[in-house]
Length: 497
Image 1 (tube, helix red, strand yellow):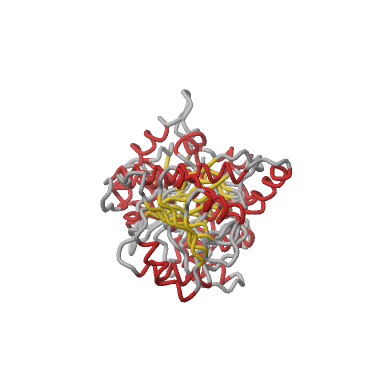
Image 2 (image 1 turned 30 degrees about the horizontal axis):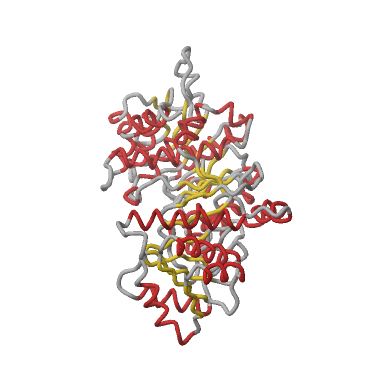
């Protein structure tokens, strides 16, 4: 599991070690230098004579970069630091110059020459801003330099120190000017902005370096890996039967949108539900494609509401409203998607999972008095997912290039498992059916432990993404192919235990 902690949590963990004289900067800069050397070798460049340019700001990230530059210079690397503030870390500056490196103070007039210098580097080290930086992007000379550099043809490999400078370290925002990184070397633990959208898309890889920090047990944001998802995934006991494996009720689709019902029920069956009951007008089509599905009402352990249900579908809306009574009275977990979101009661328990995309979340919140647009949700997904959780009580799974899940006690996950090809019609219906099957199988457990619901939602997002890779590695996928790939994706997941 990839865990992250806020800047305040990291600084609090650093403080006692700094007071005790632990050389945290030496540890960090040594690891940073090692990462840069690996990048140089991977490029096929000889270390002696390789060109590394440091972008140096006034804080400790700049100090890390300068000390790393001194290590690199002693290995024969040509190191040139571009100071983007009048004052930089004194000891780091002295170390670099003593090792034979160069340092140039860059002002507005010197931006074109500095950009040309940076563009000729084999590796560019971004040490402009650190944990104390405010969100909103780079400003001043740094913004001018990065803008000029990005306008030039070609670019060096960028290694960011702790985080790409200018992102929202704690919230993942990425407004303004930011220099994307090929590799981010982060110290002590990952920072939330490295996992959360949209900033997560600004670094291709993250390397976490242990520098001896004692961080809190509960992280700010987590990302499940396959073994973590496997640990919570339901597996039938030797004496299981269809009723103990989870019975899922699905209210989805209509004559206008029959595919949503087929996809949601197919995904639930292939994800391992003990039984799937379908309620709606297209049962003939559902059974023709999935004969395992049972038509009509009956006892269920969890629900899926809403895929393919339009606002003018009075019959399906009545079924959803009636089924919500089971959620309220019997505590049945539910996945609330698409057309069911506007039917959500004022407040629901945490074992109800909302699965909106950004536009749907904006509409849900606007109806409930929060003025927000789709664009604002996309710019600050963590913020608005948390607002939705607070307003409704539900666990919120906000779909996107990085899926954000927020549940009780601020449990937060950010999953980046899906290829961009998965942004296709019907993919959300498959996810709803998959997640519904998981909740049905673990219905008693999520009622006993509300923190399990967001973990299961994150695990479902991981499997959904992996199934897309299984369906057609590296190429386009259709939603039905993703559903059909679920058994293999789940088998592979469980072998990672």
